[in-house]
Amino acid sequence: MSVFATLVEHLADLLTPLFAASAAAAAIVLFTMAVRLLVLPLSRAAARGQRARQRLQPQIAELRKKHHRNPERLQRAVLDLHTKEKVSPLAGCLPVLFQLPAFFLLYHLFSSRTIGGEPNELLGHQLGAAPLGDRWLDALAADGPFGAAGLVYAGLFVLVAAVATVGYTRTRRTMAAQQPLALTGPGDQPLPGLATMNKVVPFMSFFTLVTVAVVPLAAALYVVTSTTWAVVERAVLYR
Image (cartoon, rainbow, N blue to C red; front, side):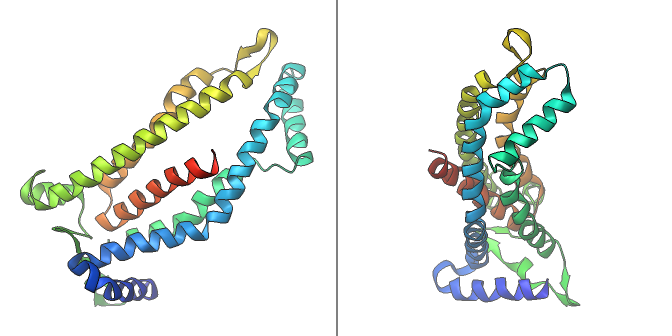
């Protein structure tokens, strides 16, 4: 982690003439964008996979009608279809999995008071008046929700809410388009629990608000930048 800390510090030093005391925050944003660029090929593969899965939905619906009395045979038939069409059901998970190490590195880096036995100087960096190692509760305890640090978090919450609203709208639209194909059994009845899932899943976009509120500000910046990138990326790749 000391190597990672050194990289962040060097990048912050390069950005200091432009961003002054918020240079480390800018370094985290650029680092996040670099991570997203690295996983862009996986994101593109995931988009292709989703379009392929949508194309297979009518065939899967037919398999559900045919094997609705035999779940094991249905599962084998669906897996065989995915294999035949070279579609991986797990492709959409890979971009998220490859980003997790970067998130946990940032979380640990800005949660540790010492690095290699030395004081963690990164904790002294700020975004505006909010230290990167602090959390929202620290800002509230210091000068309330409308203090200098509290307003930094308020700005982040507004940005996250706007991005989450866009994500919510797109998810609702996508799931509504897919719902007529997600049928099984006699009479084309919806799958059990499908209606509940369609109501709950879109609201997962707003979970980012909780994350920003409880993790160190540095990790929150990573989450906000990555989430914003993801929404723009999906608008381009899934259009």
